[in-house]
Length: 148
Image (cartoon, rainbow, N blue to C red; front, side, top):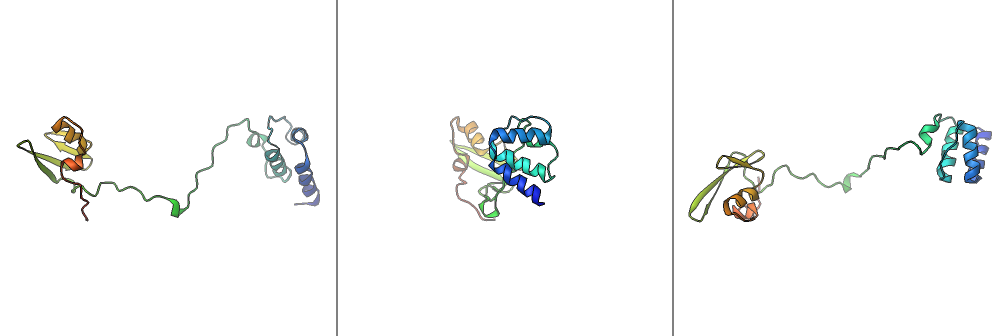
């Protein structure tokens, strides 16, 4: 950065909002509605250095896109497993005797088949069978995790 540009940038830091708006008009050739003093002097400094040519990018009258959210690896949560570990593999049958009837539910890749009807969850199957809300894993005795 040349001496004159460095001196101009230092002068920008000491200017008031009205003075910065006037300098904005001189540099970009159009007025700004910007009132944030710190943001204005930084953008003007970039323009003086030749790294910013378009005032539309610097003026807040144009919508800005938010920066992508950054996370570090240790703060990321592990991704959820695709299938609950308590479930047997797809194609397996889950059986239970309820009120004297033997019930069979087939595990699908996405859901459960009971008497030709596909349900999204075991709880929905248990609700269909009993007429009341049940935890599906509890109803079918799958409360313990199995290791695979």
